[in-house]
Image 1 (tube, one colour):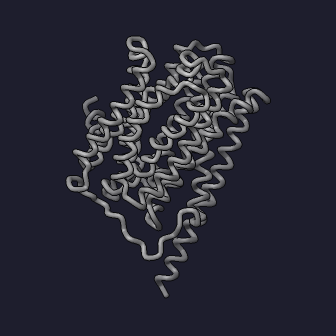
Image 2 (cartoon, rainbow, N blue to C red; image 1 turned 30 degrees about the horizontal axis):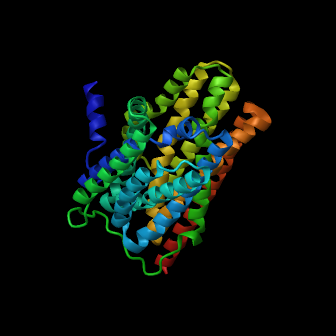
Image 3 (cartoon, helix red, strand yellow; image 1 turned 90 degrees about the vertical axis):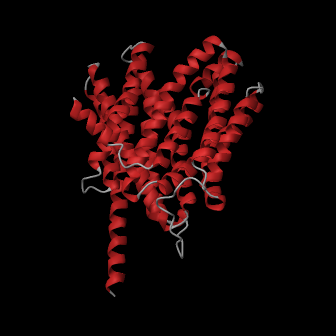
Amino acid sequence: MKKILLQYIDSFSGLSKEVWWLALITLINRAGAMVIPFLSLYLTDTLSFSLEQVGWVMTSYGLGSFFGAWLGGKLSDRIGYFKVILGSLFLTGISFLIVQYFSGFWSICLSFFILITVADTARPAFFVALSAYSKPENKTRSLTFIRLAINLGFSLGPALGGLIIATIGYHGLFWVDGVTCIIASLVMLQTLNPKKAKELDKEVVVEHPIAAHQDNTYLLFLIALALFGFIFVQYFSTIPLYYKEVHQLTEESIGLLLALNGALIFLFEMPLITYLEKTNISKVGYVIGGFICVGVSFILLLVTPWIGILIIGMIMATLGEMIAFPFGNAFALNRSKRGRQGAYMGLYAMSFSIAHIFGHNSGMQLIDAYGYTDSWIVMSCISVIGILLLLLVIYKLNKERMRGASILTK
């Protein structure tokens, strides 16, 4: 037991103090984002919105996320990641304090679009900051560490949010969210100010940078990643419905199954990534492995009605997430050095915004039209398409290496 604990602690060694500060800022920010998990309840219970209206608000949320990711990438290249993250955190805090005073349908749609746009401008900037604060050999582990902070924040947030709603009410959430974002910006100002923080991997100025939208290999990779996000988000929208309607699970049991995802990530992701980094498999190869795991998790649901398969399926999906996201992120960061990092990471963040915009709604429509069985078959087929796209990415990367080697020998 002591050896396992020491190995777990050792998986965090070598990370820079700036990465630790960035993780703390992320934890404060994500733990403070309590409004989001309770948004649908707030809109229906407090503002008496219909489910159709809630759907449009969530669409506004997704569009804001998409636009914010694009804007954040542009701004990161123009004014630098530090100013983008600092401004985003502070203005998001102010936005949370203001948005609680809107109650009309269109004003809520517009205000949440602006709120999420402002909040998600920080996403590409966080990736660029992480690249700057990490040694090249520690990038994947640093990314995994930030994911750990995000998951821990998302676990703490809803628990604290429920307590605040019970004692203060929904408006208390907006105040706490706003204040925590402002606190996160102040922590960043004190700890990661360019005058205090040390960049360990300074961005190399490329003589003839490749525009992110013209890097066909990278775009293929992002399309595959968007497909991965499309099927993975089902675990937080359609899969819980499947648990309840087909397997008759209670809300408590569904909550425990979903909590298994966070618990596995917290306990095993850092040691797993530390171990996998020592192998010779490429980053894209590991993303393929993640795709296979998530695709298999849907196939398992078709194999047997045994209730235990739900646990096995969740473990497989979580394993796929733990492998695909860190290595996919690391590949995007490495690729971004061919051009402007902000634009590259902006497109990366946008690929997941697309998955959220279309994944939840399409999954619901599929189930309504064809049922769960056919829907899971579709998800499995999408995983196969994603794997084929990634194999094409590997082929194109190999051609690039051969072309580079040919130039060097001339």
